[in-house]
Image (cartoon, rainbow, N blue to C red; front, side):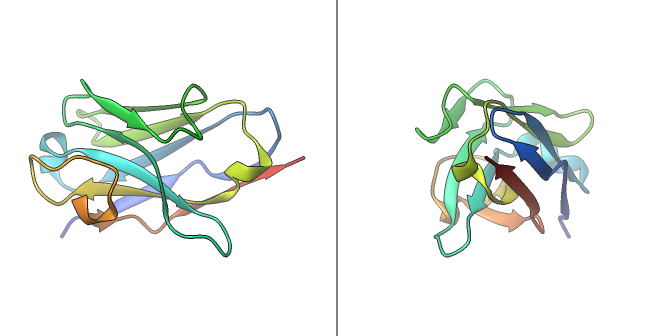
Length: 125
């Protein structure tokens, strides 16, 4: 059973930074793409960023491009989301997700079959 555990959320002032981490419980982590999604109160689940198994390709939502950076350390079975220049509209629960198959990658939730429990990020103005 794959388990994903997020950490690093919290309360930060607008303009500040946070780094989220997501550690996987299985050694096969390194062959799958990973992604971050978020859900704000009253809003739908939203794609944030994704990274291929090697880290060679990344993708970002337009709303976070240039401010957020996704990266991974396969030896540590961990994916990161560095969030800079945070805005109040970034407030949400952030979830990491693992691709459903070794060749899967993209922005759709259907590309991912394992999800973490989420970590709250609150940006105050």
